[in-house]
Amino acid sequence: MTVSFPLTEKRSADELRRHLSSHNLTCPGNCSVTVKCHVAHVSSFLSYALSTARTAW
Image (cartoon, rainbow, N blue to C red; front, side, top):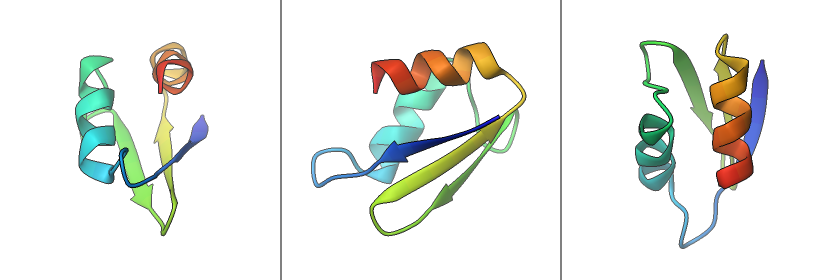
């Protein structure tokens, strides 16, 4: 499953990595993160954790 996370000045890629780790998603352990200019694409086989992280983002 792949989900997009919007990035802003207040929500950076580092903030996203901390947020993902609070939902037990670690890169490169069980997810992969691709950071573009204003969006990050996160892929993981843990769909419930990923969707919960996206909802809380």
